[in-house]
Image (cartoon, rainbow over all chains, first blue to last red):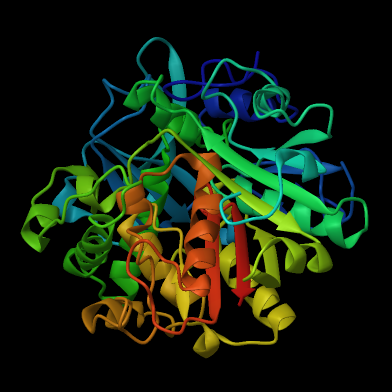
Length: 137
Length: 350
């Protein structure tokens, strides 16, 4: 159990933060926080490079974020031919957490603006795969 | 080794630079060493994706300064044409974070496109501004016999080309290419004996930024480039105003505009003024990429930094084979790895 079904194409299976996938399947997008120095991490980490502690806690990324930037990808790499066009975006959330994900397909390109409100939610992909995506807040 | 009074026997070590996984050969340093007749001298591999060969240059400089070697060859190469364009895009994308970001289909152009979009939103930069970078670089690329694209492009042709990843269009992007480059670096006293016009490295800067796009604090400039530039200017004891000619990493048109600002040629948000006023043409205030840049030459990843060094060395010697900048004495090379994961800035002097 790990990252083998994460995203359209996954390139790894094992990771110390595999619990992320368990949470994702339960409907939650989680980040980690170092219990010692309180620094938050997304992508989540199992170890804190600041104080070298491995005593981390999970917390859910909730609430409204803000679109930092985006691009409509018309030319997908191998494995993404059927996905294109897809809209990649970066969203800024509380605790300094920034996330890269796709924008939900129900958002029209003309409605996208840098700075617009976003939420992030799990999304089921074909072939029993799972990821998360941004939706309009 | 053109114009140098040395033979292959004088090369004490070689550093082979490329990005892995484009060809089946594992450990290419040994193969290239044998092919060039460098065996049994030491040879090893250095990689920072698209900035591999200027990282190799930094290592070569250190080996010579440390007294271990007198002459070191920095050989960059990439063979990309055996892969389909989509496979190459996938390999390049895996130069980013493969656990968290490649599964969403992040590619190098998409990463830079997000920088472009953020720059447009914050500073009002337009697609036309970006296209003007390609107009300039295609103008000079037409004179470069080693360039992949040797055709001048009009603003209309660029703006009407198909959108690859918005706002970047086909002609905003450099092309995959096969290529190789070689820099011969020698100890000062040795250099004076083997060439009439040695070119000196006076500044070296290198920095990194996060592998993930999620870790980026700013999307309107490359932090690795800003930090590498700061180090290089400090070491060389010069400022942006002292640079006579520059080669910057224009893997995309937006990348050149970011470079103007990250290198201090323009203030943040004012880079477009340089291209609007044609100040980065050969007769402008700060000529940039007057060999056509990556946009014309193509971007054989591991070879690119060495190709940029080649152009500045020729400029400073007054032997440019493309447009010669008159009286150029100090030149700068800005070479970026990945979507701004690695930044190298090198300053050279006549």
